[in-house]
Amino acid sequence: MLNDSITLMSGADISNLSSTSISVDGLDVGTKIIPQNTKSTNYTAILSDSGKQIFHPAADTTARTFTIPANDTVAYPIGTALTFINQYGAGVVTIAITTDILRMAGGSSVGSKTLSANGIATAIKVTATEWLISGTGLA
Image: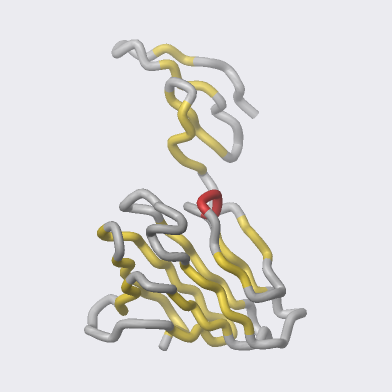
């Protein structure tokens, strides 16, 4: 694990070069993994879910709803990515959105989407109130 600081020619200080995260001038700029947030209940995403996977495990065979909150509730920055994974054997997950727009990539379908078992989908915030989602097992 690297935790040394490196000063670049531009003067930026890169630190926290751990096995999972990267910081520049004290700001977290990314991870080398997609951290997992396991949920076996209905769940509304929070700001710290940005860049994470919301994982529905096979052990939970109940259908669940994972909700992307409205921009006026949680103001994710444009470019935020939320990944949803529904493990094999798990109940169907509905990916819902409150008052903003969730649009299927490659089409014009808007609103809540369903993610079947063994499905994976990523939603990316493209404007203040619109998300674009794509994936496998997504309808």
